[in-house]
Length: 209
Image 1 (tube, helix red, strand yellow):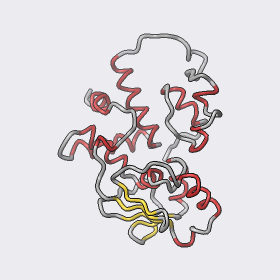
Image 2 (tube, helix red, strand yellow):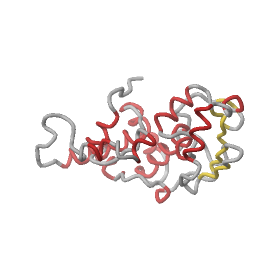
Image 3 (cartoon, one colour):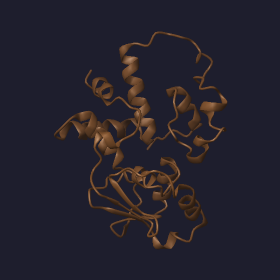
């Protein structure tokens, strides 16, 4: 699957806000949004052109896609899934994205960023209901329990992650046990549980054209 491999800080600058793609660095003075004064990348980044309705919708879609680190084709697939479900398509889409295993690992404080969570999942450091899962796009369900695999708990990398994120807020739809290094999905997230600055109705409008 094609995946963006360039400087991720450029993505934050392009969207004009922090996407929290680099873990600790995003909270420091080294963050590109601070160091570069949030300038849009590229030689034409400072031009002030009027943005069309389509452009606004595109930016909403791109920003959300970059938050979760998924490809164009995967994002479109999730939108199709959301359309087929009962309820509001935009909210369904965000719920699907939130329940990806790499996002749940990040939300639970078991990784510093979604990108890092994706790498650690691929390297089989986590289990779902006791079984190792190495698919970052695996969708968890209510009642599932995610844990750090027993063979990874003594890793210096894992210990550092747990120490750094021990006090980080956890969404209420997850029940995290820091002693056992587990996270249980209490319920699927509602829209008010998702704290990302996205306008999902614009994404629905984008795909409805």
